[in-house]
Image 1 (cartoon, rainbow, N blue to C red):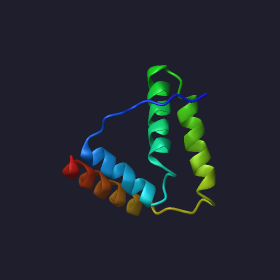
Image 2 (cartoon, rainbow, N blue to C red):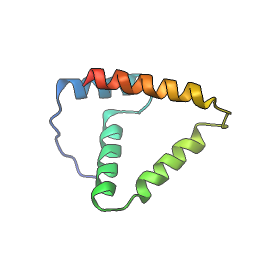
Image 3 (cartoon, one colour):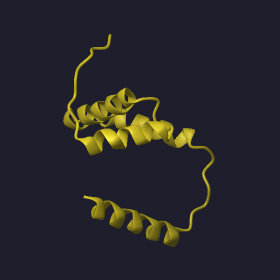
Image 4 (spheres, rainbow, N blue to C red):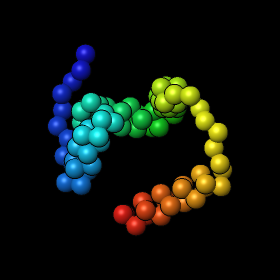
Length: 88
């Protein structure tokens, strides 16, 4: 059984969630919040099983694995990290 509740978000949080829904990464904002709460509970209850199961399922659903150039991957990861830290 589900329970309805209200959550207050910053404008940037709400905007980002709407962007993710519009991009098709999630069906709706409720799905994002449910995932976030599930992960938060798993972290605080010491049960990583739910997080690991979700990550496993995402990996399987993403399709066939491809070979990766590790140097290119490192550069991309560093660039993403820099972009994220500038946005904070």
